[in-house]
Image (tube, rainbow, N blue to C red; front, side, top):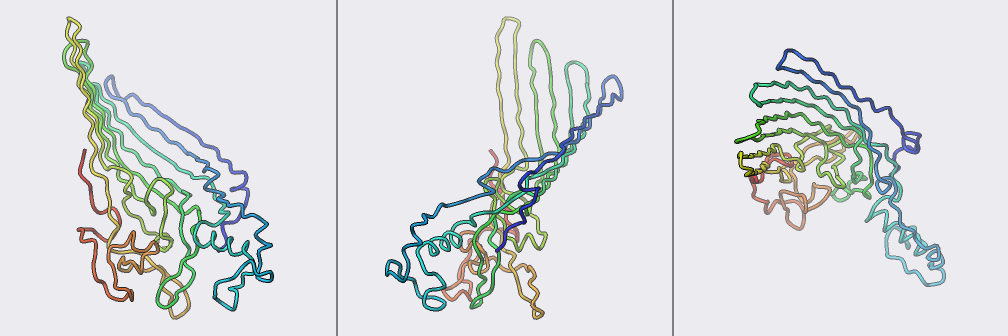
Length: 318
């Protein structure tokens, strides 16, 4: 499976990343603020190149001198004549492609704020925001062909297929006094969709990417909040208490999954099917339904009240 083309956007990427901030005072107690930013994030080298140095000496361990005995396969040697070639194909099949050129990850963000001073040390800020990330580096196993009714996928490789979209609002309320009870409350609601899941080495079903399918991610809590209370007396007594809150994270594998279907015309298209251990490219670890040894009859499921997509279950808040 060829990787992405190696162009200047991979070998020497660059971008102008402007920041723009505007403030307008509506009145003595009301202010509007707006900001815009364009961001670029260079990916670690490990996401660009994942190599394993196979010793050249293994080329000398070949069939002719009896050092290497091939497993039966296509022909007498599966087109492999020495241990070097066997090690290379094992790594490419079961680990990662050795070289997967990727571009930097990019994002744009907007936010607008209304700030109001109530007087008496009380202030309120409300900030809606929007952010969209593109070219995020994700790993995927490419579909190769169908064999005996099962879809065969190739080695995992990295490519710039990830897209995420955040919309939300922040709220902050502060009370400032030299004495007595003061404090602050900050809360954020975030609604994040993406065509992948996990913020650490994320993986994606490339059939879902081809279908332009997005779902709620599991690595962002929808609601987070922090309350801070402070009490000061003229005699110098100081009492402070901070209470954090985090709503439950989304989880679940989903009852449906995307896979490829080959039409009579020979064209391959993504379709949504039951998420079984046979249909899921990652096998039983991310399947909702489980089949018998023949892979034809569903014999069990996770039994959780999930929707069609991953992340439709919610954990408890903290």
